[in-house]
Length: 489
Image (cartoon, rainbow, N blue to C red; front, side):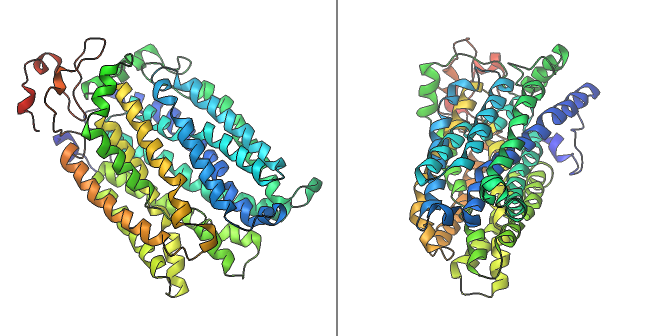
């Protein structure tokens, strides 16, 4: 790790990168990161617009006065879980420059159709279909990032891409505010209906751009934008770093190795904790509305404060993880900020200014995401199939908890107080920090440690190559002579 320790926090490239590698990294940065960011922004506009529509006339127009909002959020989560599962197989098999834009096209169409909804059942159906198509985008981007970048490069790119979440949530409120202010009643459509139309107009063209811009992966590249020499260089630098580039067929041996490994389950549990550290996404909007002092436009505008600050949190935490304090400390710092806000909201009987602070720092929770997934990518870099399966199952299982836990701890009828919800999320933050230290001890901050199970090195893929367990790089020939029972790095 001497290379990392010698590196300054402001250095974009590693001191060991050759001029050719720097050109490749810059090209990948320009192809991958802006498109991933813009599409994630659009995804989150299309995902969170239901919250803004709900407080901007939808509830009154369609007669919603109970827990409909949390039910819309729940059906979205169910669609996310169902939609993820096929991609365990598809990620290493289908070119990502075909897959990702096609999914964008699907969710854009069903985002548009929401403008014509006239009932609870229709909204539920459209939300489910939008979520089916959106489901695999987040782990898909991390799969692609992990296919091109080294361990010390992923965090910053993941952070830049993840700004799309905070910007999407922020602009969803601003777009809804503008639609309500300027388009409400135009052509006989309410402002909240116009918002879905505007969102689709932004979403659909990006799908067609992606077919020509997204670079795919080194194993299945988009040759419209990537040269043979660039692909060869990308593979060489990844293999030098201990990553496996070529995909191999799924086998029962691989599945058995994954599902009988305790290491798989601690990664999943870690992600479950992360997914449950955030307050309800609509809580800030519902609290502002409950103050009864702002019109609909102002409610949506003020609700954008938290995601706007989230841009800073995401950049600071992810750049710090790569270049300054490391992954464990970055997760702990973000969690500490989130914890202070949750404690204030759990106490509740505090000055109003304290509540503004607590809601405003809420996006410090999501800043952890790209650090966590970048870390997991590094741990899983030795086998593409294992990486695809684990990343997707981590996301699917963690996401599935959001299908039922919010119904118990964040029911809409308890808004904005949520007496159970804020306490629950605060407890999850404490457990996340503790689990992060377990991950550090087991794997190391850069996936350099592993507690090998007896016999792990004897597992071979169908191509005859020996694969190390999570997080350990071994020489193919030397690995044949290592006694598994003595390995405890």
